Image 1 (tube, helix red, strand yellow):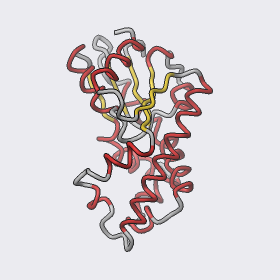
Image 2 (cartoon, rainbow, N blue to C red; image 1 turned 90 degrees about the vertical axis):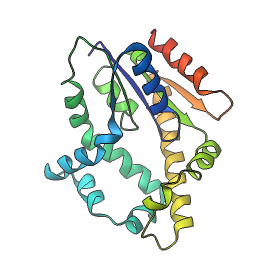
Image 3 (spheres, rainbow, N blue to C red; image 1 turned 60 degrees about the vertical axis):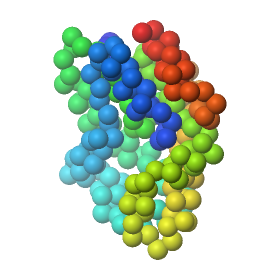
Image 4 (cartoon, rainbow, N blue to C red; image 1 turned 180 degrees about the horizontal axis):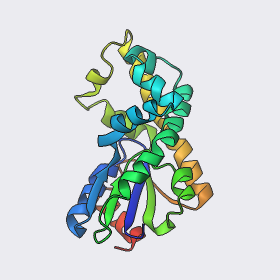
Length: 202
């Protein structure tokens, strides 16, 4: 898909904001993978994918009180299980209009496997302190953790999982020669936007 541009990476990094800015400025179709994650996981469950099936049945306590490393490993595997559905969805967009898509599901290994050009893919990951600071301010976080007996520990596990996920993505992107932007709050969203647009040669 020559007209496809992808932003991968980890949560709380600015992926969605930049993708929205690109869609608005360049009149691209915008596909936000997170809006369809539950749908794809249900599909994977129906198709007998084990980790997606298990995740769909887990309570918040079971989800967030696991070790962060195990959470990271299973999250990576779930993205591997659902990637086919994401790629199929992208293929349904009209070819006459370019597409900007973003989501943590776009792992470097998966994007590499389908042959995406290095000028059409970037990862954005936050440093741990930046991620922790902004996530702790989001009003919907308590709803995600509802049902956990120790919400503080559950939140710490969540943040550690995302930090480990960011490290994994950053290392794999570097190994495969893909761009990865690390954000710590020292540059604004407009500068990040220009950096991504320059990589995409827009």
